[in-house]
Length: 558
Image (cartoon, rainbow, N blue to C red; front, side):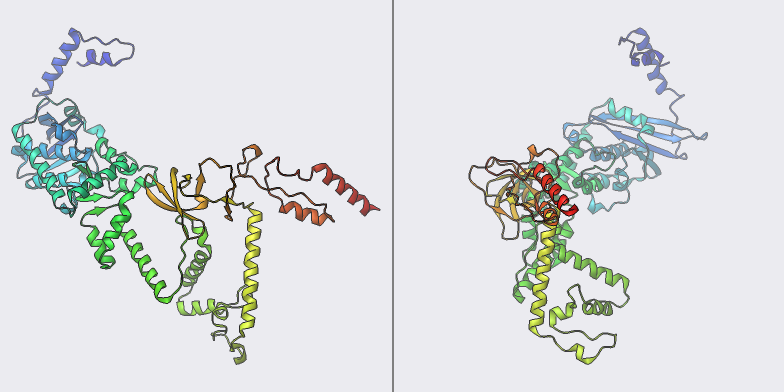
């Protein structure tokens, strides 16, 4: 029956709608509404409503399972979307199709238990198990309209949703008067949600501008309009949004999470300061924030904010300076991180935490003294038997020598690390310099150098961040004048082509070594890569070194 129309789908066939195609098309239309396809409604049979939405229309079909187990359609329905409805998010269009289909076939299903099937999986919990207060504004209104029905929401693959999908792509009807009134009702309800937010009109406009300037928010807005990807995005910043994709909606150009504003990165610090006003505590600040704002990890951020505020107060009370390391640079705080790891291991391996800590504090370190001796100048009494004389306090002179020895040990470690990794000095960045942020993979501009070691404040399109010098690559053209430098340790990438080395390293004339061991030590101290310059002398050539080794070998033989 459909062969003349299916011929037009072949690549080698030219498109021509002739008499045969028109006859086949009319025959298909007559069969679809004939008694061989359609069935009479029977309230005793299991009833199914399938609905789907496209970018321009919605379609639905009412079916019943017959005695032979086959599904046969009872009635079809479709209509085009109004201009306002076409701006809905994809999940809102699917919820609209479900509500419209149930109301369209209300004479068949009202008061009965029936199945509603959809190929949009995130819609299932929103119309069944999700709390009403945690739904986006428009979907919340759709859910309220469906409360008079008793559907069992089920998900089916898209390949099994053929009839409803076809009807939504080629709708035959226009929105009726009742449909237009329903649209106005839904929009009025969504706008009422905005009016209840504790924010002025100017503040809402500020949030809209910030969202449009934020890459992540614009990507989420695109997903809401065109549909979310079937699988989790590879970009880590998008994963928490994808996991909560059923909660997002766009109302009056505002990106909302249920009935809360989605705060972009550039405004979060300002919002945190507003939340912290009044110092109400972590729990109350969380509850206050959940009234109107949302971003990924908001609760954890509020908790960290309070922890930082409490520690600052503690440092002020006890009179010590708290120097923080740069964000996303944990190696700058390596000593503290290693201490935390050691204590965690002790607490996991021992049932008595007090005895575990006592053992750690009384065990000698590589310098010969235990942590208790370094802190208090004496040993601690433990479960091990000791002579009373060993528990006497040490003199301050002994402790001072140990501290000097410890400082020398640290200096040697730092020097060996620098030599092993070819650490070099990086130029100091000045306010206004353009840089590339390695972790964010975007450009920024230096605002100022912070008082913390090797730390800079950088302005980017996503807001202001603080980064370590090793995370910043200068893109500003070097000036003719000499640039002051600071001792900062990085691990440069090895390159076999020295022409691409941009940082010049001073070369020192090589002295004539007195022995082969001194030659080896001297070669280890030389930079791994050098850049030739007209202002620096030539290094020792391989020929001179070879001649010296040859003469030294001859002297040993003689």
